[in-house]
Image (tube, rainbow, N blue to C red; front, side):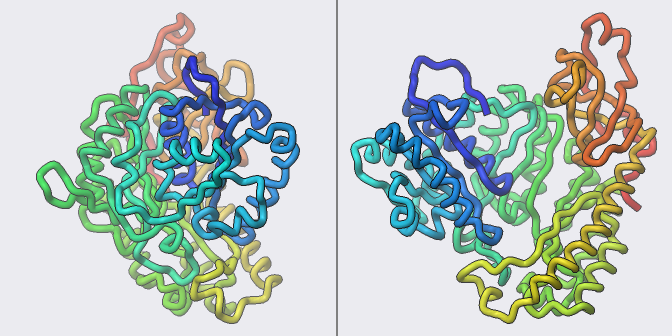
Length: 476
């Protein structure tokens, strides 16, 4: 992250761990602290305030935070006035225990209270340690500044529209650290989206712990679904691409599935966690859906948008999972065929129901994870190879590793690099895919070569343009 020049000289360094929601939360904390005189530091050594934004989803997350805090002891000894804070889900879960284990910490703030950071900083600067892990009655978004240009969000940006979760999966801490489901009002979301567009953002990813459960109040006083919100965001000038994550299968409503077919700006990419292919394990996880239900959602979505790519999440070695259960997960993968997926060994989270159950042997977990990842990696490679010779609209976002190279993303979230000049940054250009590499695709721009050579530009292209029909079919 970088900031615009400012005459104010207090410096903030943010270390972010975890999910896209945490990335966005860090950006908003930069915004709110910017109003009280902070600019972003380029490194920890020059910072007046170091803030660690933490994640509590994986095992040993708290220990990693304490390890990082330990590395700051020399900085704190050299500069006793240096403020150090812990935010996010570990802060919410650990609370005052953080002060006990690491006395160098000045501020502990949960994810629902970071709008209060400016006041907490001023009190901490006077020597008063600050702890706020409450779930305040006020909506933090009502007290946050509008999205500004203080954080340079590149040409794509996250935008939180929903927080919390009411599903209470037996392995998950989110309902305890993020609270109950809540949705931002439509007007507030659209105001931020317009500000992002004014700042040059072309692509917006609507974020939520359970984003497709969105039910924000619209200008007419009624509850809007995520699909209705997407259709309105798609009408905003400057916004060319829309994504959303993360979703729950139970909340894939008919109108959201239909939006994939009738809203060209909604990218043909759906991340839909399933966690297991075994109905017995899904019941133990309290997922509230069966494998057949999940398959049906994917089938209906592919019918609405035949070129859609599917991504998923998997947990292996959940308490009580047998080899037979695991093979049902492999069977599900073979049937769905994923363009991309994330898989993890089950890790017990303190305070969750699954943590109290009989655990699967660690060696068995590792073996199953390796077998699953072999399948998923093969599917991802095959999906990438299927893009070769196709022309895809690519949003060019940053310079690549090589001179004269720009890197961007296809509609399917694949990283694509092409030879092009900086004048095309922020543009959506048609690129023919030439090669599939381990973690990216190599391509060439197929239109406007002469204009580029003269320093010209290309018009943005979208999936509604003719290039959409040059063999872009996604996974079968």
